[in-house]
Image 1 (spheres, helix red, strand yellow):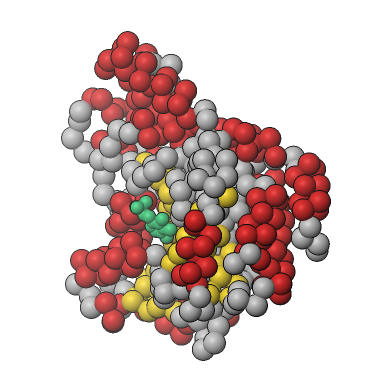
Image 2 (image 1 turned 180 degrees about the vertical axis):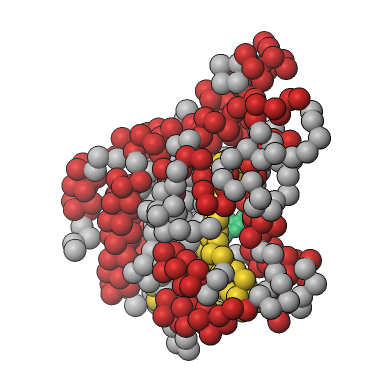
Length: 417
Ligand SMILES: *Cc1c(COP(=O)(O)O)cnc(C)c1O
């Protein structure tokens, strides 16, 4: 693949998604009119339509007060029903997904349902070096159930000299732990290395030993193609402010497979918003869950944050995951080539791409002792990437608003280091 400017421009001119860039606010740079923004994996940019979506709810609140619950343009009583499209992003049936709360809160709620250890079956298998919030969730859950971390949690780490996990190693460990395994809990895409795990294979082997399989899809939702329903995943959760551009600290989505969601006896922590909708305001004693993931809701919807998500979700629905993933793969492959070419052209550059082929839109570059200087050099030139200790630079060229020319320009800056 050539990495010339002409090639990048040609790709942009042929890109069916190119028009979406102008539907986002690209942050202005200090040295250039727009930043080269490669951190859509951390906080997605603001769709220009967000203001209007939030304004609608502010207007209804202003004019209708409490009546907005039933008489607003988008009645708040059933606000979560406006998010059916979320299911398409993760490959689920509409009833299997609901938007509520924030990610870490939702992980705890889902573990209340799906981590119910017994004396014999109490172990959780997860990736080593998971996102800190996930580590703390698991640590506190096992302690909450009276187990010691080292007895209950098995972390899988890469083989010596490797950066990614091999599916065969994870599978072997799950089989080895066998009937002591209560839960297999992985990220969908690993935040640090960018590795996309084989959700389908891990779910199948978890089930073969009688364990549940759950996934934190924070870096997977809106990034890779998933089929959570068909893959028979038990539960998943994700945030919407990374690849899904839905405002800082924005709401989270959860998936509960229908075989659990439609079973009213699936244990859960309950609140009034998960109660049978037709009786919700009858204020009766005795919790009857709404069928599907909706039965995991606790509280009434945070409408303003959800309105921001609605703006973004409508855009995702228009584009579709297939088109996004197709462009994302090309963009990421182009970035990899650009990075390799820059390294060949400038011997001050020394890094190794640690993101394996199974990935979404992210490259993690393991740098050497020059790494921080390189990162600072890029930041001064309005490249917004991120630095992860000890020495990884993460770059996420996202298909919704990044261009091939962005990537090419990044390469030129790299060569000038
Ligand atoms: C971003 C991220 C989180 C953040 O959790 P919040 O509750 O939204 O603050 C948690 N887990 C993973 C894997 C993440 O990537």
